[in-house]
Amino acid sequence: MFDRQEAAWREAVLPAAVTRRLAVEAGATGLWWRYVGSAGRVLGLDHFGASGKAPGIFAKFGLTPDKVAAEILELIA
Image 1 (tube, rainbow, N blue to C red):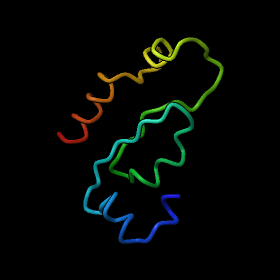
Image 2: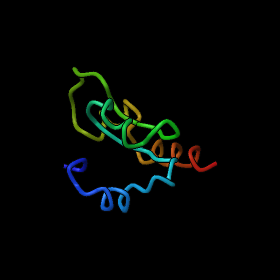
Image 3: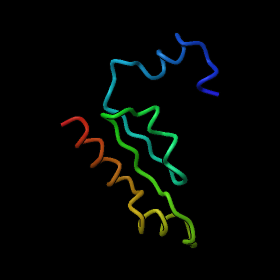
Image 4: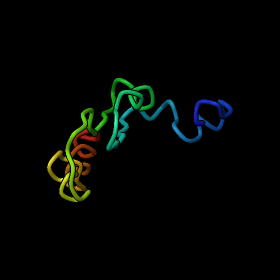
C-alpha cells in the first residue's frame, strides 16, 4: 500500500533526507531494507518454530524496548 501512494506523500512519511531508520519486525525482515536503506537497520526475526507467550519470545530473540532503544542510540550516535 505504501508504494502505491503518491510520491509526495511517501516523501512526507519517509523523507529521503532521513537515512538513519530502524524497522522492527517480528516476522520476515527482508522487505524492510527497501525502506530503511543502507544506512538503516532492521531488527527482527527471519526464522520460525519458537512458541510461547509474546513477551517471553520477544525477550528471547531480542525484540525488547531496551534493544530497540539501543539500536536507535547507535543509529544516531
